[in-house]
Image (cartoon, rainbow, N blue to C red; front, side, top):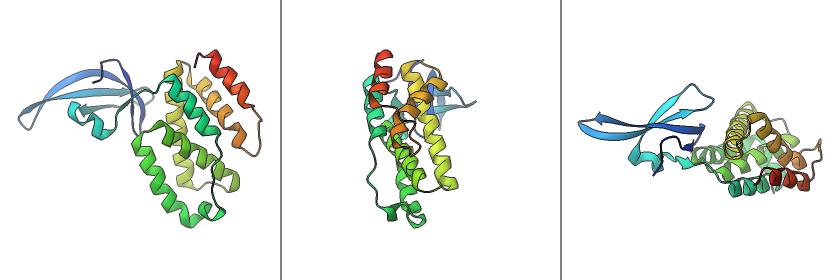
Length: 186
């Protein structure tokens, strides 16, 4: 399924590389594990080979996936004022946590966009800020890995793509972002 040295995404944690395939005896039976090492975390995990799909490990996105993700980020959300209130944070948080655990690039980018939009209407709560920051880091990691650029440049792409959503409007035209992406051969 996956190869050693292949970059993958571990839901909720971000981009990792499969460093090796390990065989261990567990409960008297030989089991194969993938060892994943994370780029920015001093952490490695062993995932049983037969549990990769259940855990949600996925291949790194493609260039086309990134282009589609940037489109998702530029779409405004349709939300009623009452949905932004404190009482609905629990409902939104459950939905956001499911999206985070899925590891799906488009769900993550939608949550990021939604939280950014909400932050324009009200100050984000502690939980919302943490979630926004975590998802931003995960998106930056994936953009960086797919485009083979450093994280600072990946952050720049991310910020340009959502600039049209912010009230401060560091107005970046979609054409400018498209031109930047074409330069990177996306």
